Image (cartoon, rainbow, N blue to C red; front, side):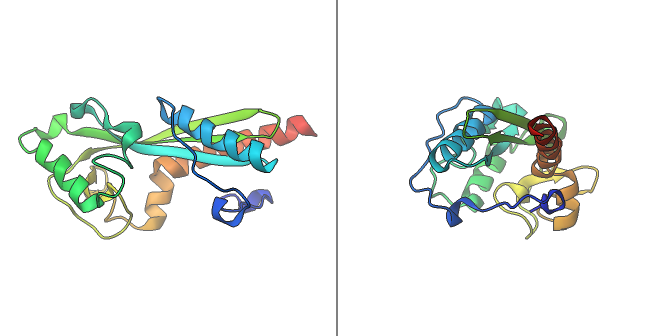
Length: 183
């Protein structure tokens, strides 16, 4: 993960004693990230970092939004989800296909303290499924500055410009501030 330079060990949730599912009951990406981070921090008694992210398509009133992973059902393959979105936008002109990936990140401490960061990666919905890199909606998310879908750019390029990469860089600054306050 991109925080090794801070001397902080990040342990994936799957490698902890945490059990069960966390219900995403928030109405925003930020609320869902806080819910997840708080539940883990309080249960395990350690700081927890969580994110919630998704795709917002302006023409579809920001759908699928916070329901991106569950859009058309949790078990529906992304190839089908992507094709459904392309079908919905079939006759929509390029200038109305604007979209963004959103990532909200939350750090929660066991005492209830939280810090959040949110970032976006702007683009538009392309006209076809393209690319093998990435996952989810990446093959239909077109990046005009690259002339490619986000599934066609390298992982290094994506980390520099992605909503998650930006949110994590913002969160690193908040963690540094928090560590200064604790000292």
